[in-house]
Amino acid sequence: MAVPPIQPTRAVGAGPTGLVRAFRVSLMLDVVLGLLVAVVLPLAIVAIPNTISVVAALLPPEVSQIAMIRAHGLALPAMVLTVPVAAVLVRRMRAAPMVVAGLTLLAFADAAGGYAGSTVLVGVLRVLHGVGAGLLVPATLMAVWGRSSFLRALWAAALAASLLAAQALALWPLDQVDSWRVTLQPYPMLTGVALVLAALYLVLWLKDGESTAGPGAVVAARGRTLWAVVPAAGVAALALGSTFDWSASLVIRAALVSVVVLLALASSGASRGAAGRAPAYAMVAVGVVVLPTAAQVTYVELGGLGGPGLSGLWSAFAIATVVALLAAALTNRLGATAMPMVTAGGLVVVVAGLCAVRLFLPAPGGLALILPFTLLAGGASVALTGALRSCAEEASLLALSLFFPAVLAGFLLGSGVQVAQLREAKTPQALVDGFVEALHLWALIGGGLVLVVIVLAAVLARLLPGSPGSPGSPGSPPDAGTADTSPVVGSTPGLVPSPAGEIDPAGGAWQEAVTRGRPGPTVVRPRSEAVTGSHTPARSKPEAGPERGPVAAAGGGTGAGKGNRSRPRHEPDRVPERDPDTEPEPEKVVAPPVVVPPPAPSPEDGPGSGPALR
Image (cartoon, rainbow, N blue to C red; front, side, top):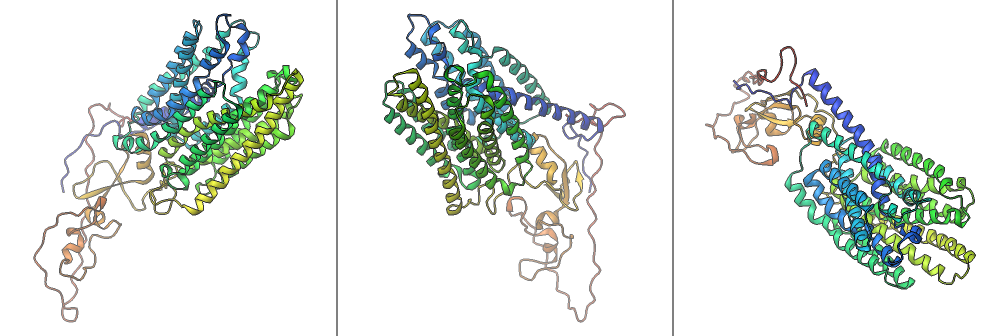
């Protein structure tokens, strides 16, 4: 049958020049995105520590130190409240514009920090730091989600390494400074580099032709992800209230209640199935223990307390960062079925790191820190990579919305433990001993909390298996990151569909097209194959019954098409049945194949070259 020619667009061209160009753009996009993640995540996490107390002696006499410490600590509560909202907005705005917006806020707050002169202005700028960082973390996660799985592993490793080194990175610019405003602009040059990378990423993203998310996906995920705003607001309120002379026991109880609420939300129906609960549990466990532990270790190992100082810690941080990257890369090479055990194993390694903190620290040299830092960073990297590998996009955003409340709850719990241990310290030596005892007690408490999370995840995975709609459960569709993208056997790729056939996606090419937002190659099949849903000849054996005859069996009757919707059919005249004993079998007639004419050349294509693929 005749099919009118359809002029192909540049998006579906298959010329060699266009394919090479598209490959180069995609490769450049991956490289720039990897560099952007490596720079942006440390910048976002470095905004968390409250370091104004280190330079409190440089504050003007008329400025209250307590009020300034309270204002400087607003960054983390602002981040806690921003991430759930940003997790919803990123699916409507997409990642690239949000990365640029977050870095612009950080750059503005850094530039204005040099002119801050009051507690109110410091509080406003720290809120801007928190909002900008809160936009960056979910935006970078969604930016790597549709790309190579290695970039997702890189994101997890960068987050784990940033949590470990955030306190040291925040303290490093304060060495030998003569202005307290440095705490408001620790790395302005690095922020500028990140802005350049973000602008380049935005240009490549537009050139690559990424599409926006459908409104249905945004609406479906919005309600579930915004659940996290309620506990986030509660934890932020508790953190602010604890600065008003709360007792140590009250702070500890408030922090424990916050952790219980976060675990309850991670276990609730908002993240159905074991694959949906895994990232939430991993994020809560890693958030509660890694950064608060690293912050206490960094303070204990400062030169004034008998440690090697910041200069003696960088070798341990560098080795731990390399181990985190290697661990994430190796985890990414494992099969999807191993991810639950890998995630639990990573959390067990984190517990081993906390045990090493209790056994080997404090230490006069930096080499003793290699083992606990490596275990903490490597275990967190493995746990996050394994959890994010097997979950859906919505589950990862919900888990990230619980991550920063967990970090804030961990700081509250660690602060309560420290205050309880330092209450009776009267001499400098007693103060040092109190810090060390608080660190050892915190390592014990943190390890116990992680073990509780591991046991809770295992018990619920056995009692509440994944629902049919959850990723990784029986009968559920595979996740985009782990779906089987093998081509259909016997399929024939084409460019133009025929009215007499059904269009089915061609395996991995269609999956790539969905991920990148571009149409991929299609398969043109006769209507008989589309109706029956399998590759069978056009003529089939007639079925007995008053509603079906040979014509209906050949594909002219009602069939289950796409979406199992019934098709209108024509009722032909009944054909008398053949007597097999007296009448010979009629000759079988094979239906002619559907002929698709080649597309007419596009006027945009130059002579001698195929259509370009963006």
